Length: 520
Image (cartoon, rainbow, N blue to C red; front, side, top):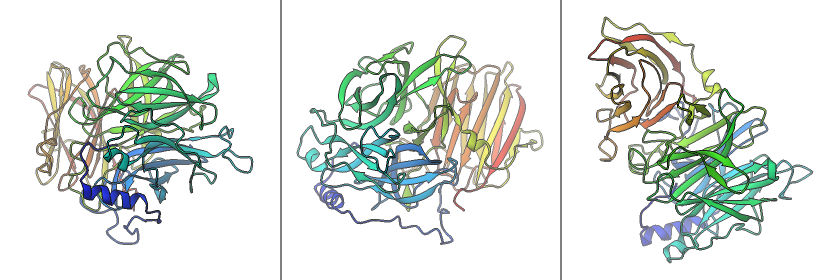
């Protein structure tokens, strides 16, 4: 969410000007124009802003049939700048309606990441006409204080909405959690803890997580800290999330803590780690089997992901969306009208492996399964295991392989420009490798065309699903036990699959769904 560079004096001046400008800015793209969402590399089935810069998803809340997506947004440029909260809503997690900017900077600072909840019982007292409000909690970031060298330039504040998120009012007595003197003090994620009847705030504090509790979202008490000696360190922790999930196929429930970090990811730059354990309203007890980090996504481009609040408990689903980029090159990717997009929303599950280890998996949502054409079984061309996907705005491709005694299989996504996105399933080394050196445009950053490697359990039989958009490939191995999200910039969408191996393998099934643009 935050970018690690020293702002120039000129940039600071521009930021101060922007932070005092409360005019209602609008995104510049026009849906009535023929070029709407057709620029080179424009995602067709993923959320991206009409124009300008976006990064972290914020304030994810479900209310009255709407999935709200707020997001870090800079309305004056397609590179990072003074943060606002952009806003969009969806009925189905597929089609999105753009709404006006929800939160603007003010004299206390710019609006960094945070969360939103449905205060159904009006514990905050900020509701109206007998109804509870939506309450957003966010980080104020004071660039002037940061430039001056203070350690208290990030503080937590709230805003509330009594019209289901369409307009927001900042609380008169902000900030509600003042900085104790920690330079990195940000990204509040709020949830309701039913056993203690309190709100829980999960906050990134330097390179640990601090938990607070509150009866009313306004008055907060520090409960505990977590993180020393476990997981990946070396940079500030960011964008935490805390939620409870049932272990699939059992009656067992566990708490999951997500923590993003930049840099420090397994393949360089940004990534999100997770911990599984117990939480009693005060302390998180980590039950992960080792102090080494466990990663939610081993790709280069799934960062700062958080989950939706407000989904009824009876529904039982935990849905997450992430920012589809990496701080190593986010400001340099070869787009102009806009920069940044979100991953596909995915459902999170806890699964118990044969070893007894409980792991987090992610997979496309049920809503996505019902979108697009029906699955079409593909026949290979000639005898080369080459499959044509046809023509579409995006593709959902699935393949099942029987590797037999083969040590590895090579899957290549290709197009007519001879651009290739390569995936290697290495049974001998028990890993998945991705190569995007020849995937299209790569020259904008030396950190882009690098090997991307993930440990993976690869048995004789493997299922692989690839969601292919104009500028991304999301990989799900064995129904989400491994996720690898990577952006790409080919001259045209990959519409051919080549499967190769030096030894004999069987392709049990190869099929595709064609996906139409969500924007037209």
